[in-house]
Image (cartoon, rainbow, N blue to C red; front, side, top):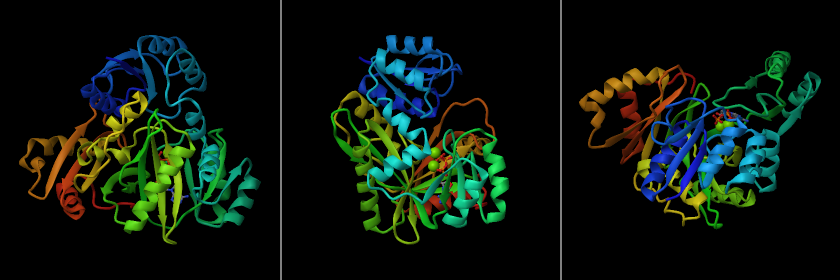
Length: 379
Ligand code: ATP
Ligand code: MG
Ligand code: MG
């Protein structure tokens, strides 16, 4: 059997390895932390992501290389492409590592994005805020995740504070108009190294404090929007000439239009629902796509709500798992996925639960009744 090398040793690599094993693949992760989520279920090289010797060792000991995060060091990506088989290539990383390049590529694919402007000075920011209007959101062009590196500007008086806070990071900045949305949805698209494309059903995503809290599937939007979202994601993955998964985050605007927020060239938290709810999980689909296997069926077998378990929820979830409530009810079947992380810091993703159900309303009620997730804070 072949061995798949994974740059990164977090939960995405772990779930990739767990999904790839039944297909006959072995895994080897490269991560600085020994015995992390992926290292617990696969072989591992313990070294920094930017360590070129370690990357060369990974290339020598594996047959195919993939990654589980997008901020792969450019030199390491080039080295791996030269010494090994990296079906996803480095161009997709280059595009998605930078919000301005990403937006240009999305527009070239025919997608609509929020009106935006590149910002290199406070004067430019002030002019752009006047032009795009408030509210708007200033973001670092690189390195942001879970809403980090963002400042929502509610009126022009906040320009100086926003610029001071984000310019400090030294990263390039981008200003976006704030889209008034009905809800946020995402589509996980797959394209195989053989050129086959497939999309999973859209998830409706609820964020709290900038972090994904829950995904609801089917998303509660009109059927025409569900179809449009899948077609848009397919068009993007084809236009990008991507191989592997591409997660496409969108806003369903109050104006009835779909705006693409950002994309990620990897399995995505909002696609975890596929693990039990679809015929094929996003992780199996990713392995199939990069290994040149035919893509599996993305068909939804049951409605589902995925809820994230963050550090502050872990004690409650551990207690819940010992009680009969963890079995669920006739209406809701909880499937637990814990990542085996040692430290449960606030806001850190420690696991998730897929609540298989007949009606997402029952699963949402189950989450409220569990008493682990505070009922609504900042929405
Ligand atoms: P992720 O963890 O998804 O990579 P991130 O740090 O890259 O997050 P974004 O996805 O750009 O950040 O933004 C985080 C959240 O902030 C969005 O899911 C959305 O709720 C809100 N948001 C960001 N940009 C906009 C916008 N232009 N209009 C409306 N809401 C926005
Ligand atoms: Mg992001
Ligand atoms: Mg996002």
